[in-house]
Image 1 (cartoon, rainbow, N blue to C red):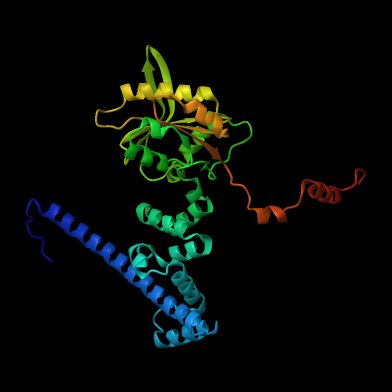
Image 2 (image 1 turned 180 degrees about the horizontal axis):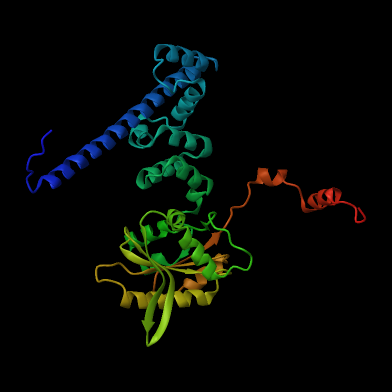
Length: 345
């Protein structure tokens, strides 16, 4: 094909066409997914209804799977196991309209994860909304459920209700968690705060995922000069939705009341030196290894700047069922003693 002289605005024209095609592909894929999830809900609903209202037995699932695979051999998804998921899906989401608006907007296997791991309807709906908003992959969704994000979201001690206007204070409270889970870090018992900071920056992608959507890293050890003296902020972020700077102060030990006074000073300085006239007030988050929530609440009382206090942890506590199956220290010592060779061997 001969190459003709092209108009000067042709590259921009071609870029627009490519973007339109990509957007159409995404919308088509989403539409296909939504239709598939709604189809699965319909199949599950029909099976469930006949089992509950007409007494059809459990073996009907195997029969439906067999007949549908014979009729549609080119389609996957009609295994007995998947049809059981469809039935569970219809039972978990009895309202077809809500399915169309929410659950059908995420992929089918995302829904299967929620069916397996989340039993509370309100919690399940919350994870669906978060998946849609944040674009979580299946693995990320599973990790967020495993970390108990629903229970941790919005639980940080804060004075936001007193220091921020109502819409901003509610949104700010919801973006903070307690505790924060840094499972991606490996810190020794002698680690210092700089080691924690360095580890978070080395795993910045995982760190930002744990912080949540909207956080943009501005820098670490960000310099402020106040009254001719130098001060350094551990971590400085800008939150795109809150439209404000967020200062994070890292602590390796317990939260102390003086930590809130230090953060209050940082916020006053940041509002004066960093904040643009169109920005909302800077928010501070003290991340500590442990805290007494009552002490934290008293420490924040009366302060003029918005501050939150939350804990961080490297590993989550083991489930009770798993703890029961682990050997006790005495059993471990006995086992190690039995495995050790005699001293004179």
